[in-house]
Length: 396
Ligand SMILES: [Mg+2]
Image (cartoon, rainbow, N blue to C red; front, side, top):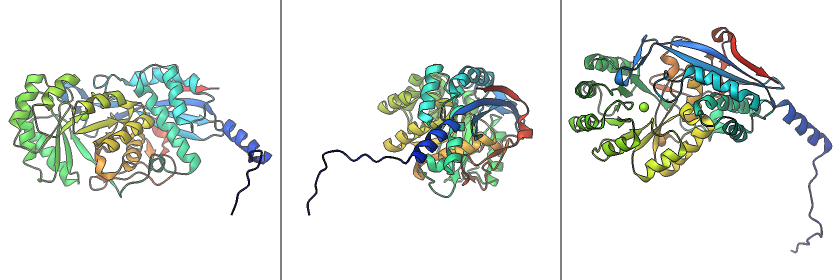
């Protein structure tokens, strides 16, 4: 058999109708409106306390909407853990969106990396501001392709996602009682909010471990609350217990010092706020697991990037956000469900901590687990009556 090369390359030409429809499609898929709602999310437990006496009673969440010329609407959510957890605050989400929105008009939300590049050029830093826009773009891409976001992020791994329960900081016996109660509800993974008085924190860890089964996972998350010497005292005092230590101190260097003085499994959270921070920590062997929060990293696109790097380099993850309601929980579920199971340490069903539901179709915890929706996009329908009036509405 022989082949004859033609003197001219054969160029496949699209029929005129296809060219026309693709031009038309790219036009109608342009972003024509960016809007936002502010929603108060009171807590079921009425209060959530963590390190150094910090607390929140009602979360201030921003629901972000992106609308295309053809009327396709995608939603995202950004809900900081108050103004003193990460360098993020609720009113800052809305102020930042006002800055960003004019730059988004006319973009194709399906070109998500491009949208992120435009956002980074228009507003330096402030990843949490961009997170809701990015999530809304994934929702639109899913609705356009008629695919759930988890399938677009890599595929659905396993049947369900293992959740942890965050245990608000209280006296040791009350925290142990709360762990026992949430264990009855099906949770098998718990994150104790420590980072207070070191002696009391040692009691918190000891009393909680006694109400758990050997296979249950316990994390002591100090949320940067310990000074270096206190952190070292705590890890020495609980050396005999099966407990993970998460983000003991404020700085990366302090955490690295604690890490080098303990053999407890070690989690970094607040310090891992970018791909570069992870690469540095990996080079220093500064942790065994990482906590990835969608808004801390700037949205699903950037979190997926780091998630994939963690999988490739052997780091299991807590996949979650700083807080939120139904829409944030849906985004977490899609991110987690698209992550290979042995790299999923835990995730969070934030919508079960709050009293307000903002969307139908959001994941619901069953026996300490949840699932990502099988419907297109995030698989949620927002409850317009729960959102109230728009606090931001910018259109072309
Ligand atoms: Mg943490």
